[in-house]
Image (cartoon, rainbow, N blue to C red; front, side, top):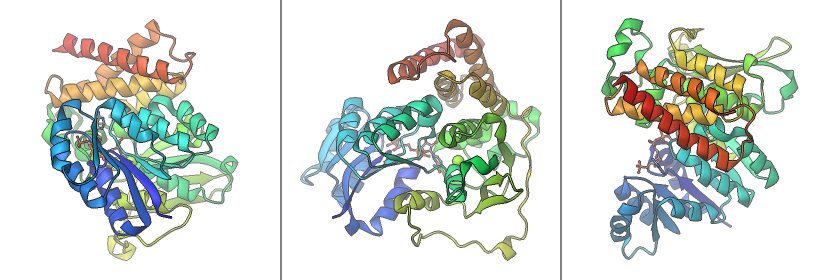
Amino acid sequence: MPRKVSIFGATGSIGQNTLDLIRRDINTYEIIALTGGANVEQLARDARELGAQVAVTAYDDRLGELRDALGGSGVEAAAGAHALQEAAERPADWVMSAIVGAAGLKPGLTALRHGGTLALANKESLVTAGPLLMAEARAHGAQVLPVDSEHSAVFQALVGEDVGAVERIVITASGGAFRDWPLEKLKTATPEQASQHPNWAMGQRITIDSASMFNKALELIETHEYFGISPDRIEAIMHPESLVHALVCFCDGAIMAHVGPHDMRHAIGYALHWPERRDLPVERLNLARIGALTFRAADEARWPALRLAREVMQTGGLAGAVFNAAKESALDGFLAREIGFTQMPEIVERVLTLMSVDYSLSSAQIVLDNVLEMDRVARQYAAEAIRAVT
Ligand code: NDP
Ligand code: MG
């Protein structure tokens, strides 16, 4: 029986890497749903080629275009948030969650109900609603496998280990586009400059989040939510080469480091074939040629996003949903050139501060309605905070 797979965010960087792996072995898969956003042409091309059951664009007004592009293929065309949910309701054994942003939460939660595997690239799901997502997976006997490279690395380093023997988890950060820029110059950084990652080829939003360290901030929270390790035992360390993805430090002094090329097909492939390891089309590292791997402390004064992540983990509850939504809005503001690069963490901090006073973030119940409401409200607070500085 072919394995039924669905890919949410199929037109993106993670989605396309996932399809690259699936194409190599297409006869063993049955493609249920492929989803995308604005890139309707790519979505239709892939859905047609792979014989998907349904192709969904997130945008209602793109339905006609998608239908035309799929004409005569036998692939159903659908559009909008409701159609994304309907696609997630279709039973699948393996679902890739690779929509960018909080928009990925609901389809991921729904897909868990089939009790299959959710390969989770959408870190925002864990940041906004980690306890809810993990509880839903347990309730339905579903498996959530991390696809973020650092978290896949930790997961792999923990195979056969007792989590109780873990002292610390260290995730690495390349430092993004501005790792060597003087602090003063950061104020002048443009979206174009922030969109150039020194090592990884990724979607634009996560690339800018890497430059601001918001990506690493989200990943600290993701580590806490996924592995259940207390925040004081999780840290980020700068590692410009991006070859060691994470280190797990055990109580006997041993450190298990995961080393691999910066190619997301490794983490995606691991989640696709887990619990087996299969041959993957990624570069084999020649450590003698690489010569040196370097590390340095991550300066939390330089990167306020890291300090804010600690505060969010301290507060708990719905603080993660507020943090993520404010971050997404601040990023939109930066992309629209309404605020500067260094104003992004200022906006996020302002929203967190105000909403901590106006709402009981730490004690609120982490249920979907509350998460979505805090997400919505945080975007309003962020829009106001952006207006106030422009
Ligand atoms: P991309 O921007 O490349 O792709 C995002 C995907 O989501 C696209 O298919 C896009 O459609 C779709 N999309 C965008 N907005 C919406 C929306 N509102 N509703 C539904 N679908 C939408 O992102 P990445 O692939 O880089 O990242 C995807 C996720 O994986 C993110 O959560 C990111 O943090 C995470 N991740 C990514 C890594 C990477 O290497 N890229 C590494 C680790 C984690 P379209 O393009 O057609 O508009
Ligand atoms: Mg990562």
